[in-house]
Image (cartoon, rainbow, N blue to C red):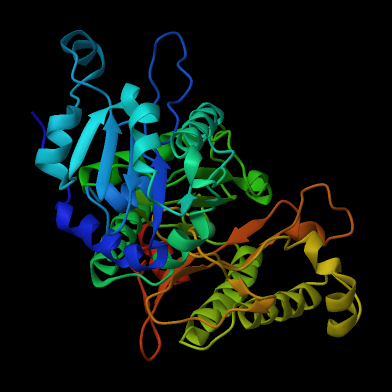
Length: 439
Ligand SMILES: [Mn+2]
């Protein structure tokens, strides 16, 4: 027997907030498709974020049908209990367990989805469903809609119109509730403490993978469910590859290490990047460049408050990094020329920030009607400037080639400013040098 990790009232409150936005409609939300099985080994499963957001239910092969104001209002289709399958794959709640433990009004076997849902759609005007996420489910939806149409033939109405539910739910997820802020604080803290442990474990001769192992051990021991995204442990020139995935090279003395890793706690994730010397002491060149990026990163964090536009953050980042590039003799010319030509992108090709929440690149818009959106209290975002000089870039000063630096923290917008959620991860040069390799 299992019990849900989070109280069902959290999810009922979310459905209640969504309800007025979709009156006279049915929202149909399927689970994330099961991962490909490799030689009968199951990959770890993570529920579709929106389905989890509205139900707290974590099993695959499940679908929510939510019809605000109708009876029953919440219906789920789930896997039935099965002694043999559960022996292999583990516990299932089954329809009875879903009703008993998740506050869902009615639940049925997943095999009943088409037949029963075509009836549940008889008295709604439209359907919220997101196409092209799961081909198989799209086909079931098409058959269901066709069946509803033929069941209400005499009404003279055609196939129910389909609207995408993602923008609606995404908008709900943009401003975090007090509960979500608490969980995000924990995710930021756990991520930060794990980064500190990795710093203490860092020394030349180890493999990148070893440090990933330390990170996972630390976050899990503090209650995280999993890594929030693919961890990047990039030693030396690998740090100039933005989405480095191999994590299998040795750590060499004298080089920098870039680690981008976050812990997921109760479906909310931290997202932190730190860059520091493998041997525990910055060289003069490393300290100079790192210090400049750090100063800019702290300036950007201090800008965060309600009303600040995303665009302003990005512009300030680009201007700050161009100044660094000119000072470091990476680029020639005036700031304006470099900015308008975009030549800085050679060393800084990404955005400075993204929204953060249940997904590492969280749902919600940062542009509305073509305008950059002002920040509002309750939003959570990353601040992550970086500079990356490829090792084969012969136009760059030799001392800088192969250096990649990114510094990333998670910041909550508060009523009158901001709160850094990831301050448990050291980033000042003195603090880093005091702990690297010292566990
Ligand atoms: Mn990030």
